[in-house]
Each structure stands twice: as structure tokens, then as C-alpha cells.
Length: 147
Image 1 (tube, rainbow, N blue to C red):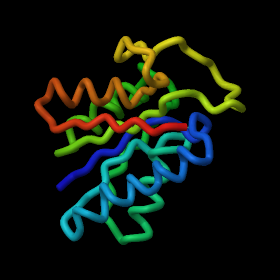
Image 2 (image 1 turned 60 degrees about the vertical axis):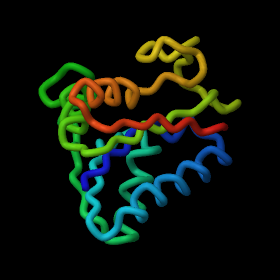
Image 3 (image 1 turned 180 degrees about the vertical axis):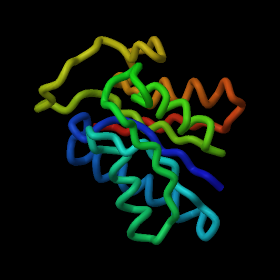
Image 4 (image 1 turned 30 degrees about the vertical axis):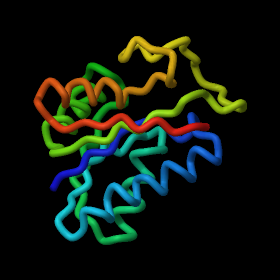
């Protein structure tokens, strides 16, 4: 089974959220052994993508990495096409989001996730990927981490 795991970058996690996220990713992958393949976007922002890949390496899980050629949204195999490929390739997709920014977060802040039109979690490109996967009829789960 191809399990896609997408979500927030490392800077959007407080330490408590990071620990919980890693624990959940481990469960999502290890509970499907031996026939699991991780689908990941190898985000340059770290976080969910890289933690998922680290766990897959630790448990010798096959990976299907969708690495963008350019770190922009709408470029030749940029984030948009990479995210579409993740949605298409995954049998099940987990979108890991956080409830709020950590106190020391220095990046751009948004009042709501403009992909989901809600303020109950921080904006994540993973939400966009999840919505694409839903349109494709894939099984999609949003998992909110409390920071």
C-alpha cells in the first residue's frame, strides 16, 4: 500500500508537536508493514516530509519520493506538480497539520488556512494536496497536532 504523508514544515512545530508528529508517522508506516511504500515530497522546509523519510529509512521501508525540480509553486515540476503526483500516487494520504504557530515562529503568518477556509489550524500546502487526493477518490485523513 502506498501511504502518502504530507504536512507542515519543521518551523511550524513546537518540540511537543514535533515529538507527537514523529510518533504518529511511525504508527502510520509501521502498522502497515511489510507491504507499505512511503510517498513523500521531500520538502526543503523539513518537517513532516523529512521525518517520514527518516522513519522509512529506519524501518527499511521503500520510498517513492516526489522531489520538486524547482522550489516554486508553478514551475517545471515545482511544488504544484509534485503535490499532484503525491495525490495520484498515494492509496491513502495523511495530511499532518498544526493547531497554532509555535511562539518562536518567524515565518509568514496567516489568519486562516486559505486552502481549508478555517482558522482551526495553520496553513499548510499539505491541505491543498489532500483536497486534490479527495477529488481523485483517495482515502484522506487530516491529523491535527497540538503545539
